[in-house]
Amino acid sequence: MFPTAPASLAPDQPTAPVVTELLRAVDAGTPGARDELICAVYAEMRLVARRMLHGGRLPWRVSPAELVQNTALKLMVQQRLAARDRSRFIACSAQLVRRVLLDHTQRGNGTTRVTLVSALAEEPPEEVALDTLHGALERLARVSAEQVRLVELRHFGGMSVDEIAELDGNSAAAVQGHWRVTRAWLRDALAH
Image 1 (cartoon, rainbow, N blue to C red):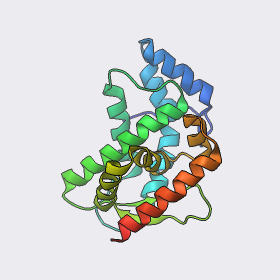
Image 2: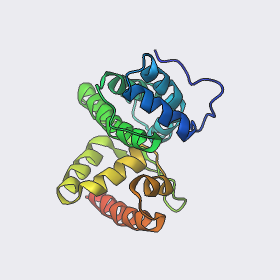
Image 3: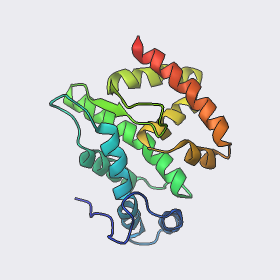
């Protein structure tokens, strides 16, 4: 349905200036810019989805390609993208990925297990039921919307601590401290 990323782009991530330039073109209403943007980030989004969905043992689950395509469709129909650069675009995409997974779970009347992926070496991937994770994030939202956003950026957006620090204008040490607290709360919530 969506073309693959151009061969000239590295498979791990397009350069930030390219994405930022395309975001500006989308915002200016340049014809075809939204399609070019999706093509530019498609490969990166697919890698994140593949890592996040790795390890699901249930016979029914969403594929990485389907997750990215449905997220891309939601991005394409938005009137305005609330993103000025690559990091903010990935942050917007992370929220949409979560919504797409929830929609998929509700349509299938089943449980989708996702593998929580972290860029921190000391954190092994964990497989959790999406509905359980969603319930935990809903409870966390009552206490701290910022911590929910951190989980979305890390797990649904695949962003590193350094990328989040740059996005938010904080130090990596501060983000890592917030992440440790958030991760501990989330582990406790998922265990009960």
